[in-house]
Image (cartoon, rainbow, N blue to C red; front, side, top):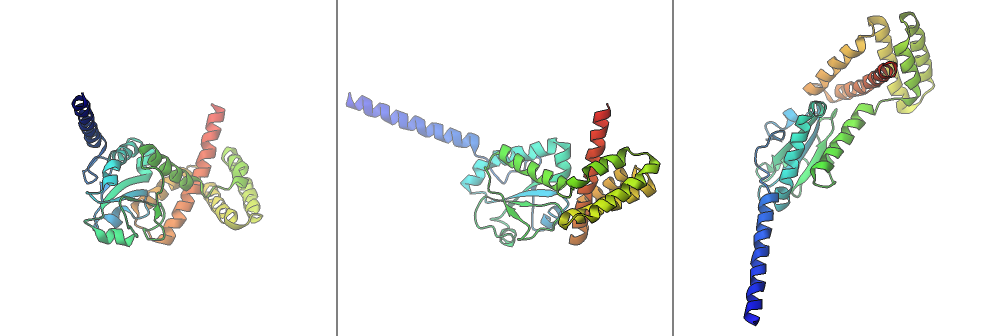
Length: 264
């Protein structure tokens, strides 16, 4: 009887080992596999893609790393989700680097363990100072929520709440009234301080251009600015100004969409 119990216990241990192996096969992937929506970056291509033109999430991995293997499926799903969303795809890049083969890239950004996931913000050139270490859960939903929060911050960071009503009034005003509203906006900005005043000055400049060139100026300028930002072919200071302008243009766009929605 003891022999039977021993054999049964042994069988259970073997079965547990089989289940564990099967689970490993199901949940662990090869982080080095090419997957749609995730760029494989090399030292020769890194700066071409991580150039401030988009928000970029980069996984620094080693092919032998167990944690990297377990994360591979979620990271691949993240790439697929970003690519399937046109808005996210236009603003975000998901990428990975084999840091065991390209240790110079890992050293450049202070990578000391695997996997290390770094976020590089839009509007800034890649550097040790600008890179942010991702410390959230290594699951697709958590990755996606993190990127969405960064995109939202990027879009709204230069919005000035105190100018919201004047922006709305400017957009609905008749042609002859827009200059008056723009001048009120200018006076309002003079009473602001700090970043609100700096961003408010951008509001005024854009409103003046719209008075001079017509209201379609906003859409045309938005397209021009986005092309320049996404190209990544501008210097650090100009990039910061372009991203700031894009955020203010977004404030006008949101107010316009709200007016259309309210009148429909």
